[in-house]
Amino acid sequence: MKKLLASAVILVFGVLGFMPFAQGANVQKGGNLVFGSVTEVASLDPHIYQGTSWKTITLCLYNSLLSFNDKGEPVPSLAEKWEMPDGKTVVLHLRKGVKFHKGQPLTARDVKYSFERILDPATGATFRSNLQEIKMTILDDHTIKIEKEQPDVTILNDLAMIELAVVSEEWMKSNPNIKLEANGTGPFLLAENEPKVRVVVKRNAAYFEKDLPHLDQIEFRMIKDGEARVNALKTGAVDMIDTVPWKDIDILKKTKGIKVDVSDGEFMNLWLNTSKKPLDDPRVRRAIAFGIDRQAVSEAAFFGYGSPLYGPPTVSSAWYFNKDMEKTFSHDPVKARQLLAEAGYAKGFDLELLTYQGLTIYTTTAQIIQANLKEIGINVNIQLAEWATVVEKKNKGQYDFLIYGVTIKSPDPDGYSYYFGSESGYWAKPVNFKDDKLEDLLKKGRSTLDRDQRKKIYYEVEKRVMELSPWIFINWRAKAQAYKDKVHGYVHTGGGLAENFPGVKTVWIAK
Image (tube, rainbow, N blue to C red):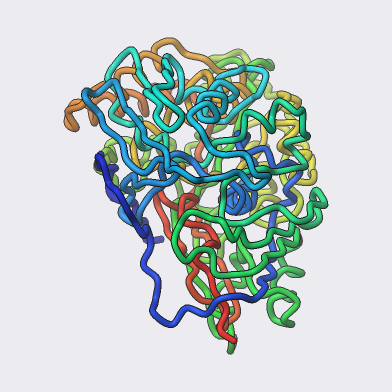
């Protein structure tokens, strides 16, 4: 499978105006879009990641301080310009006149409050680790200074992530249910929300980006079954679907009246609960890694739209890709049994594998892993669950090991902090993993300005993760979206921008 990665982030200073993704001259305004979404979105909290469908909806409702253009460069969003007098400080100037959907004016106090909420361990925010060691100073209503103890080459990149969305302090202090309600500054306003069933958003006429959005309304229908989602598109019940089942990609490409976009930047992996025996032993975790036949998974589950991932999750076109680690965990049952014997488990043991029941890529992958691990003496019982249940059990650590599909979060290698940083409520905490050596390497990588030196640091990061293996990477997977040919303006990117495209705000419908 062809692998692409957006260029590394370039620091951009003081940009005053932008259109991050070009729009055609024949854009038509108005109309309603029905979007068939694969995952059941249970919460609208913008600070707690729940999957690609959640992110598509969050990009409708909220904004972060910065955004990305199609080259992976930070560009203005709620902040219209900024200065970086040194590598540790950024002064951001907010747009004036921006209001939250419920009427509150955007101020620097909202930014400070939002970041404090993200830093509060009780929130369980996905990007908490990225905001560690920051100091925030409000200079005036529309200016805020953010300082870090050490130089941070990735700070602008972080500020462009929607997981650092700005919420209204005034609204939040009225104790709303942020899981069910929304009050952002985004291109659409929340109109209806039936958790796990449907979300309806309507055009924000006061949105600050010129001429956006184009649509009057978007209805997100949660259709977890792949066949049902494809049929809904074919019959016209929906106008667009995400996560086209891999077996249907080529079929839909040949279907009249339907367009299909395919990109990369996603991978499948195993999460191992390191607080549970025998998974607390790195030798056992590496044995599982050697025991999996990734080629078999790719062929059976992805119909030509997947490829084995034997090393760390870095696409081959990335400037920090380490070819020497590309085959770290090639299928080797003999090595797997040796490691189990060294760890004192020559007779094997039982494990429960939690996975999502709504996509065959998960169930097929689980069945192959079950068969593979039986060959090395590990008896696996597969536990199928709804997506919301998988996420809940993951976050509470109520599992032995589980299968998870992941999108590359950033075009910069500091995206590893999102995965491997001990304060990551999304990755590290659910597997009960913390490693001081890895923490030091991640901090060093973030504060080092020289690219060649950073490359060496991230090689060490990858090596350490492979040694400890709290996560086991299985295979790359393509991702496809499909839509009626009347739908235009959708931007589907891959690599480090796979989830950071402009969402559906640029979509329009030909009448």
